[in-house]
Length: 453
Image: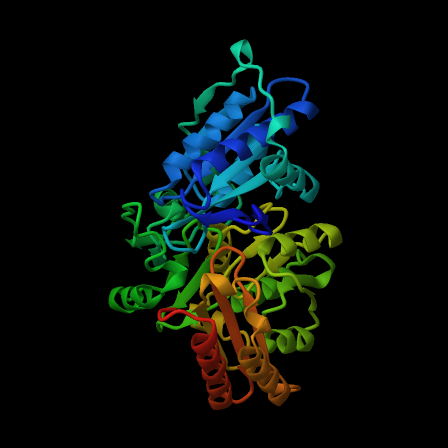
């Protein structure tokens, strides 16, 4: 790992890259830095998702915290937004989530929240990075009576669920929905929450074994589509491994992505005057059809150039905006949550559906998206950080961008959490979009890629 922290936190292959030693050191560095600012003993919350490496990395991180005198409060398996919410509720100095979100079980990560439940400041993250990578000798510990304690928060899951329920006003009236938990962190909370607000719930992919996280969910919605159709459900909800994202399947088995979820929420919030400054914040990868729809409906769009939901939240805080979203399903309802919360966003859409009397397919047709092809392309380790300098790749990307100019675009970037390239090609003509996407994908596979994406 050449750099510990990205916009999504520290991440890598569990144990071999994001090692137990790193987890101990990050925990110790965080505790020491917080202790320097605190009047009393520091309290740090630690949650995790269901992947097999989560328990040992939680133990390692907790050991690092306690070695520096902080108390580590173990939340167990909870969604990432639960950690954010519980930071303030439990009066913690910080919260940590052990997760790699939508990535396969082989990966894991460490995300840090401040006492208010926001992503930890760049300055403190930078200092943690400096201590762990270049200044281990500065992290001296006292031992003896200064050792911290480990506390198990047995009510964390229910405290988060009750908090969610307070933020939904309408009873869903036995609405039949299918929930795909991706064998992840929502397995313990989703059924409790959605039943609690009146839904008739059918659960799938809710039996985690440590290795099946993100099999289904937002990564692959085919099982959810089939289940919605087979059970004649009114909607299906898909989460990713840490339940930060959500996607929706309508009653006809059609996908409603994060852009259209954002549009549904923006339209309803504009109507009830809760859309602050009549503005929503979106990722630069939002569908071009979304931008056209927003302009036609008098909604201002603030597009964030950097990738990652953290930057969406930062822009929202800066402008005091109340709604943000990304195509992948990260939806932020600031005021109700401090971070992207898949369960809250999905429930709000179901609430809109209930109050409007419309079917999910009617809500989902809020605008017509431009045809889009999105692909994840695995690259060889030696090309991480420099794949775009390979002439054969750079030339085809440049060619396609110029051909689509004015009617579409090519968006291509390297993932911050795994060795893959994320490719999006978008335009008015679906056949052209598909052809250009295939041409770029072939160039990547032939020159910098692996045999299997």
